[in-house]
Image 1: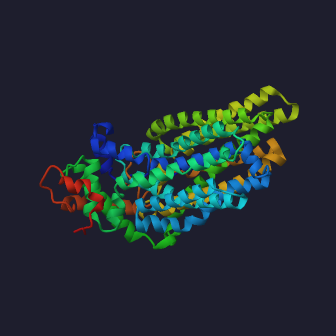
Image 2: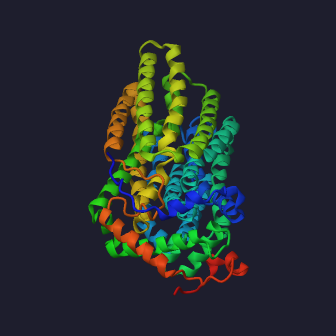
Length: 530
């Protein structure tokens, strides 16, 4: 039903299937993945920390008193400025990511977030606090768009989806730290009860700034800038353990180069390319839907306004609220990590269908239980709401957490990947801004009736995924580059075969491995290609 099922001869997929050596037995690849954790994968820790911190601060007495017990509108503004900052930066994010490279975009965004975290920690009034939150939001899209692209473009094809899934799972690491810290500081009488959590928000950005220098640049970005020799060195080091004669790396390089040439020939310039063909319009529709779905599936309620939800079911003690927040976050980390390591092996469209159907059923039960408690004060209904909140976590994580970025990287070809993820971020942040501003008002004024709007939206999600989503599993990024363009797929296959026959790799084979100095510094070489 989703379309995009035509496949070219899967050259890379076939070679990957023949490779029986696991990643942990490959020294260079193992080191690459380890370095990705504090840099690329760990970027989502910032978002998780922010979300959980804002949840926890609402139960920190010193924060409540310092900001004069913010009402629903003020609380919504404090939370939503993070999303508004992201929306403001998104038009220039693809420009930085595509022009300066994935690494520089991560550094740029991390520096802005570091400044925001410092200002938030030092905030002297409401205005300073919300400006800091705007800066935090302004910086995060640069890092997210570049990192999610870099993970897909650097990872070995066999592990690409799982590494991409762990990117979103790291959200819970930041969330657990923030939940634990606010639980430890909620009883402090001084302003350090909320300044300490704000100060710790600097840590993920500092890790990214430090460790990004140890990661190579995306080989696809290098080839797109005419730096093929550097790209070939990176591919050889990490995908063939230094074997310059590797058939896999030769095929991979030829496929990347041929595909990028075809993309350039068939793409329009600038943002116009996003709506230039039926295939691109379908991609934009899907990523826009994903942006909305990842925020409007009910997760915005538990991420930012758990305290208000618990108030509505009779739980008012701040210590209990913070304990539930911490427990829920730890549970989310466990199931998100397990799902990130298992779900990518399954078909994408099937998993998204399971995710949306499960969320619809769970949220309907959550709404009914909340209504029962509001009507007759039934304690069993109150406990049922807590149970549904915990059931919601794996249902959401199996699709929208585990697969979103892996799916987006597969959905868009290289020339449109940064723009495509930026479009996703735009809709996601816009939906998040709406949620963060409207949710506290809706919960306060309508109570459980407000949840009905989410139930209706979740039903729409099921229908959309069933009718529109394509299947992208089991193919390399280049094999997916023309997912909806069957005629160009045929040209691509012919050109890849010609490139391989001509053996037009930029490094002359003659040794079993690349010169060590060149191998270790491949991404610092300033040299031109053939």
